[in-house]
Amino acid sequence: MGKRTIIPFGPQHPVLPEPVHLDLVIEDEKVVEAIPSIGFIHRGLEKLVEKKEYTEMVYVIERICGICSFGHGWGYSHVIEGLMNIEVPERAQYLRTIWHELSRIHSHMLWLGLLADGFGFEALFMHCWRLRESVLDLFEKTTGGRVIFSVCKVGGVRKDIDKETLDEMVSVLTNMKKEFKELADTFLNDYSVKNRLVGIGRLSKEEAAELCAVGPMARASGIAQDIRLTGNGVYEKLGFEPVIETAGDCYARTLVRIREILQSIDLIAKAVEQIPEGEIAAPVKGNAPKGEFITRIEQPRGECFYYAKGADSKFLERIRVRTPTNMNIPAMVKCLQGCDLADVPMVVLTIDPCISCTER
Amino acid sequence: MSEKWRIQNFIAIEPAQLAEKVQDLKAEGCRLGQVHCTKVPEGFELTYSFDKDHVLTNLRLVVPEEEEIMSITGIYWAAFIFENEMQDLFGVKFKHMALNYGGNFFKVSQPTPWNPKN
Image (cartoon, rainbow over all chains, first blue to last red; front, side, top):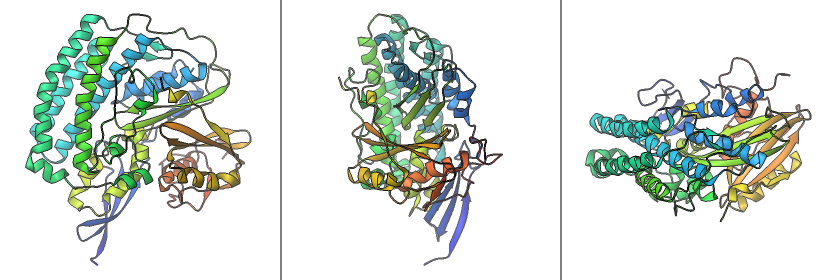
């Protein structure tokens, strides 16, 4: 047995754009234990529900995160719609699905760029983010925003997208798909990239289940768990099936996200083909009734919970958001055990940690 | 059309039943989804959510403020995230936590900021 040393990792670290801290217990070059610390920037956004009317709270909730802000807006709207028994028009459901899948593409591309940056492949990082720009341009064109969109509201959506713009969206994504496949080829087949990912940070199916992992982290370990299968949105009409890999290592987590980008492009194309004409929002009147509702959205990083408790008032008694990174921290800690110190950044990155979400 | 998200399954239990119920759910193959706390006049209202085949089961219990509740980290280790969160923000007391940050999981400027009585 070698000498044990504790190395602090973070909260400020080149691979971490946001603060999270790990105490890494090292024996020679191997990590034997990792103790996480979060909470450096906890904002207490849920508490604001006592001061904001339920129709205004969506603006707060979508500011939980700048990457999956649309999904948060959808999740919040969805839980209030459940609480108030509001049926959302079908066209609005399609539009929500389209914007949400666009968010997944830009989130995964951002992550792929960060991963490339993490293993020192700067050109790959820049190409990922260059391609991601075209998705942000689509957001700007359809919502007016590039980070916070404010198009989702309780009852539906605020803006429609005309047919010409929808067709343009499909055309942009189709062109992007060709370029993205070249990048994907580098991620999946370049020997220097594979050296950093294959067999690293392995999480078996049993471990993922035991540690309650979610999202790409769980799916890369062979668990067919995806909240898009719960009937929310129009995923069933689009023939959605989750992307599953089984190796459970950093490479498998990368592969799941790459396949999900390609899948999201196809889902958007199908949604554009099928989207019906009609209203984009149902009327919403009165107080949020006494009662409670719980629902979930499959964010790019995984399952996200939304809980609302009404009190027959314009103000809710409680709103609760459980974000995917919260749930993947225990699995990350497990993946770190036994890995080389040099691989810690890769393992941490491949859970795609969002501390902004976690510190809501 | 399967609309599993519409299923709202809340089961009221006594605090003393928690460990046994959670153990049963684990034996059935359920995954822990989340735990959260709401401050109510009687104390803390805790909700434990479990997923199986994309359907949620939510255990609901009310604990008086000064009463300790059994940690479920011995059954689902991942619950340490939620128990420490509730401990830090509301002052919920857990016994036998597998990983207890002792109130330092969140770096907040005042103790239990979401429970102003404390």
